[in-house]
Image (cartoon, rainbow over all chains, first blue to last red; front, side, top):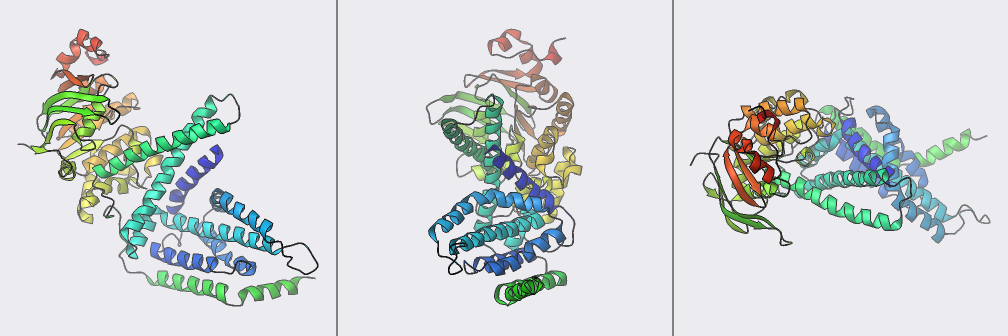
Length: 272
Length: 244
């Protein structure tokens, strides 16, 4: 848990650091990245559950973006690992629930295995795409882009407050766990202690969030308008439009075209 | 009434658990004054600051800022005039960059980007943090974060600045730098602090609070020179006055 908390914290901080890099991808308008990411997420999530081949093709987007934007794969892997436990539980349950054989006469692999692999691939691709969006725009770029795309300010405020609260929560968790570790004499965390720490965490995080909220209120934040955030209103440049069009066309081709089948045929030809 | 005056009349405050934090507190601060609010732990200093800034409202009594009574319907207007620097800079700084954080208040006040930029530059210059504008707040030292916290409030150009333990966690150099910044401010200042040397360096008058009531107030060197009074309320004569 301690490791997970510190990972969450460092990953969150790392995203803002990565967003300050100066690559040609970082120089694109945040709205371009938001549009491409939304199209990509829709493409991945709308695939039938057992369609693994198209997911493999769609994996090219995060790989390309990470390479072009100088975003380390370790950063993406850490983000995926943080989100993984919940999805892994669901994926494992699919293996248990759906034991129909994929190839008649062979008990393995089952349809459940394929569904589990597909779920894990979706997890990796969607979390990687969302993390790349944050790493390319930063939180302030993302909020200005969303507001510039006329997303309701209340939704953007929710996103921003959620991000801020996650940092507060992980920061308090790290402090509690550090304090416990220093006086634990190497003993393992018991369930009873974990329960106490969780209760403490809720109370502390609530108190801290309240202080942060007070500080925001003292500087005119009313929770309804987002005047404190820059709104992206400049005209999109030709490079933004060209890049967004190219990426969306590629995503549509990967999602609906026969690229996956072609890839399969090419692999079969290469096989001895 | 000049901009920057505070008047507290017979204020009492009870927390929801029944703890009486303030009893019948009355005090007055003139525009442009620099006042230190001192007292032992649990004296009610932070509660009083929260009442002055409309984060809490008195159980009884009246708080007036620039002659305007503090009520739920007036606190938004009063918060334009009174800036609160929190004890922990991490509570105060929540935006991705120093510039965004300092601009947060002016933007919420509805100013255009040119005016926001002017205020942010002026506030960062005033605290000597102009070179930190693009840095993320969590990458700064405690002293830098303290200075930027003050800048977030100064950018709103308040007539009163209220500071809660501004010297906490600062090394002597950081404390001297903070004292210089505070001395350069022309607005009214009320500073709750245990750091009596910082109070001596930056304030003219002190108010001693203990057990939720005002025990003494007066010119600062005279009040702190009274060893019996200081001792009775858990304080010590500051080092800077010991040679007197």
